[in-house]
Length: 191
Image 1 (cartoon, rainbow, N blue to C red):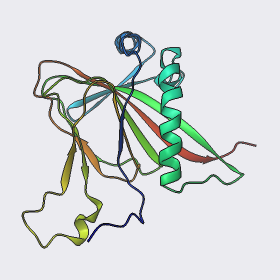
Image 2: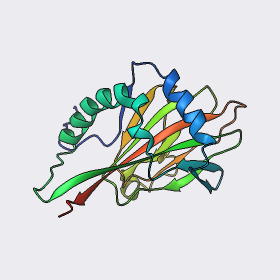
Image 3: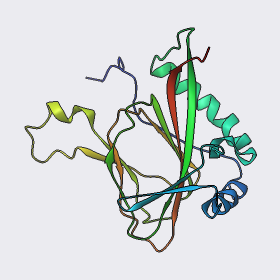
Image 4: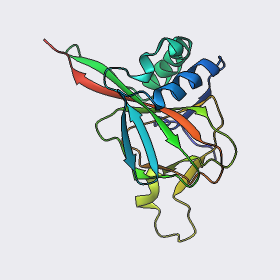
């Protein structure tokens, strides 16, 4: 017996092969920018500026060129299409996780795609976990582990659908975990 691939793969992972030092430096400066909004969630800090999305930084040009190829591959695998009246909107922010920080389970229900790019990810800083969408059908086995861990390191990129329930493990390290999240939303074109 073998599996037959008739459904899209919901979780994708790659490693950005370019330089990350300038991106990380920009993220460090972004942390203390007076125009940046700080949002404290349970065990987690996000920083964003709706007039200066991190994915638009010139320091990310090489990353964006690299990501666009992976984006197209995932887009096609998920069989996504835009109608003539639709467009894509990208929003991004930087996540800073110190020792003992974590992120509770959540989804991004209005987004078709969520991209996580690890700018600084040392050992024991916690990983992204996703909830197996088949759990609703496999609950008769008490030994089944429904939360699946996606190991990652600095420069790794993970793509999941916005509907997928996910969370981030506790950072057990003294090292800060820094990541950028990019959400992709299908919107109506402005007239």
